[in-house]
View 1 (cartoon, rainbow, N blue to C red):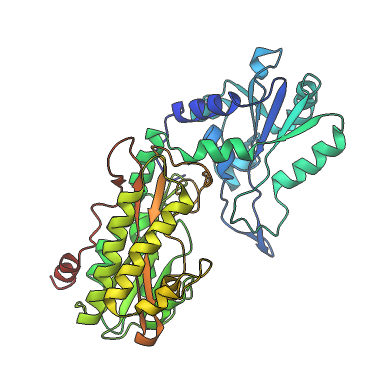
View 2: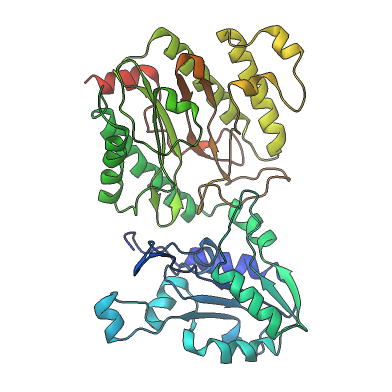
Length: 430
């Protein structure tokens, strides 16, 4: 790992909150992700399952966390299983967690080697009545591969058919949505690394530069600052490419007069930042581009003010739609008749702003977090309105990451990243 050691107080507190919502005589199990093959003898880079990381801080493959708050043996109330290391592994793969290091990282006092799992787990299950299974029920999930968690669930259901089952997801979805101060600091670190990347490219972008060259400048700065790299596949979209919401080819040349939309974010310690900025390739906005940009910026500012504890997610998006409609009318992109004839299912503004304004942010770019109950303080959301005009050959999206406060406006974790038109033009021409 490239990041500094995180205080295990975070993971101790996370486990206590999770166990506080478990049923009596129940046990919960969390597995690391697999290392996925890429063909021949190569593999993709390991990415830890965010749930076991959230509860333990362990960032290593083949790890298992077991929580059993009612265990008769006190040392089995929190148990972590890690892969046993040896001299051969150390030579070929580098050092792995020792039992002492696993406790230091996680705060879990009882550490076993993975080879002991079946024996110890069977003993623990003999006391348990319910097992919590960790299914992925995120509203945007579209997993087509069988995961290590999936295999474990199948195995435990076959081996322990008399046990009741429960779901970990509803508990995690609620807990992970509200961030601990340590998590907010990690998110701020990711945002600050993103800022360094953005400032780097402001002096790099010019006509005839290639989108992938800009992507390379970002990754250079991210890794230089102890990030693994992009928190998600970056969008570097010049000209008409900005009208493709998930454009990731990044293989076109930036032309004079174009706008360049960049949706990028650095990760740090598995926490994601998520930034979008739109800049003029030639260093100056045209009058038309400036007008659209300022409209998007006003929507972002108004939307940010709306994010407060007690607000419902779907109502927030409806209110943002009203603000966007007003801006589109002023730009002349919509007529009053368009609004008068709109349907509830397809409001007129969706022609130019077709995606949502905000999503939870944290260990995942589209993080866990409840959406059907009121927002709470210390939730972290993106704010990302956009206006896309294919007939003009450009689109504008602006995005920051904000933390909801108990009182007052949200705190913008990206407040230091340039966003005002004049500042961007000045930096690009300095």
